[in-house]
Image 1: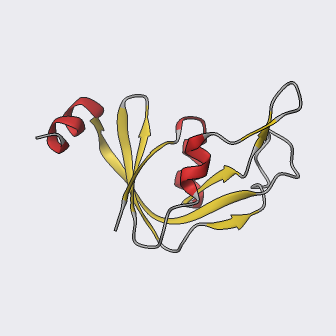
Image 2: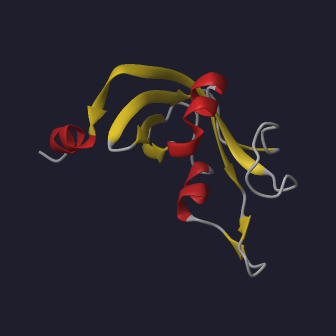
Length: 113
């Protein structure tokens, strides 16, 4: 089992409602060049059983377990950002939303001792 830290800032509702993570395979910048942020590439490495800490605004707001390996998937229908033809990588989750989010500073202290 591996551990992942995922910033779900703008996709909180999608992640908690659908219980999945999705990242584009690549993006296209304003000059028409393709780019692949490291975070998007990391999603491809998630395997069944891996633990994922869902982070937003300096708080861990959820903890998830991947229920299968990451796989190629079309862009979710309700997504509006980016070109619709770009496929992505999806990870299906068993997700627990934390009733009391954990401040990142407390989390860091627990794991750096």
